[in-house]
Length: 152
Image 1 (tube, rainbow, N blue to C red):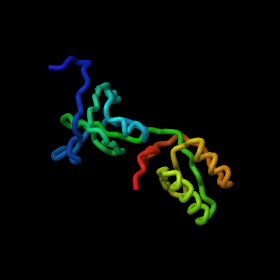
Image 2: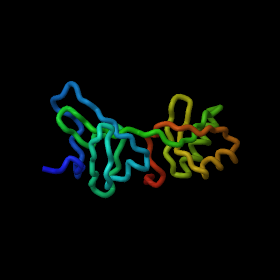
Image 3: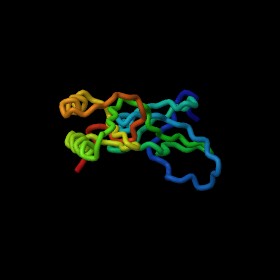
Image 4: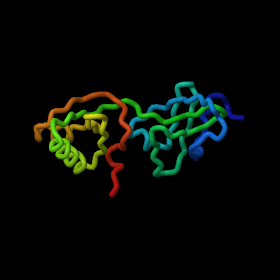
């Protein structure tokens, strides 16, 4: 048996659905968009459980994904608050221009009501400023992908 300090080794993700449990204790594991790509490391859950991720190269974790299940307890990835740019377009035309600008930078964009949200970076902030688009920086969970995850 492993020592109490030894992390649980996670080499594969469990099936999506817990087959029998009506009440499941969910332990949230907050991760940034970048952290959800780092699948070979040790993390500590809020209940003190240490998990050694040894997932296959190329695995990308997503908010809501269960990475370990033990009895009626599930360890679930959540989106951690991170630095984002929030834009509130003043018109449909401006929303389209912003979407085009962000898409050309190969950045993910989330839509929350009237807000357009993207991970903050100086290049994007500079382009928004040059385009005359007001924005604000905020700390909030971002469900999208980190820069560099984009593929055609």
